[in-house]
Every structure is written in structure tokens, then in C-alpha cells.
Amino acid sequence: MSENNEARLTADELPADAIGEQPPAEGIDEGAGVAAVPATAAGLPATAQGHFAVVNANGTLARGFGVLSSSRITTGQYQVVFIQSVVRSAFTATLGLTGSLGASPPGEIAVVGRAGNANGVFVQTFTSAGVPADRSFHLHVSS
Image (cartoon, rainbow, N blue to C red; front, side, top):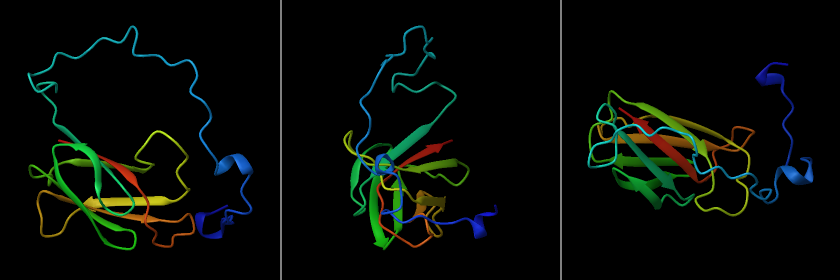
């Protein structure tokens, strides 16, 4: 079935466990047996630059690394500004709550460089039906 013909479910139609709380964490592995990459004094591998932002649905910055600011422009539109140019970088974003409790509502996210700001990233968030909606998200920039 194509995406255009795909049926969209409302929150009332979704299975109860699709919207509720997260299941309890099980089998937590703290990285046993994983070799660490030698890092610089700043903690990053000498060949990589990575920055991230975790942004609340209202546009405020929950936490981040290498990020100067975040703001909500209008419903479902955000700007995140980093400490350096991100023009030649890759962006990865996902919807997600900013804490460790609850479950994020379903939806979609799109990300692109910010027109007019070499240090900025433009993020759009939507409901699963494609309607602009304020959603919290996690953004990673790889250079």
C-alpha cells in the first residue's frame, strides 16, 4: 500500500500499548566488551565532530553539546543554532521525549540546514497524518 493510500489511525484507534508508558528496561548492558575510540581532551575522536540538541516541544533546549540555542518559530517549526557552521554536515533527527519517563506520541520529523544561518538547522515536526504539531525531538549533527 502506498503512503498516500495508507490508512491513518487516530489515537483512539491505536492499540492501548502504542501510546502508553514505556515498558521497563531489561538487560541493561553498560557497554561491556565495547572498545572505546581514542579521544581528544574534549572526549571526541580526533577525526569526528558531533553535536546534539534535545529540544522540548515548546522550543526550549533541554540539553545539548555544541549547541547555542533552540527556539520554536511556529507550530511544528524550530530553529537550532550550533557553535560552528553545519553547512557541510549530516543531520539526524527523531521525535522523542526529553526525559526518561513516558512514551513519545507518534509523528514525523523533517530536518534541513537553516536558510540564512550557516550554524543553524531547521526542524519541522508533524502528527502521523502530516499536520504540523509541536513535538519534542533529538537532533544530532555529524561533521
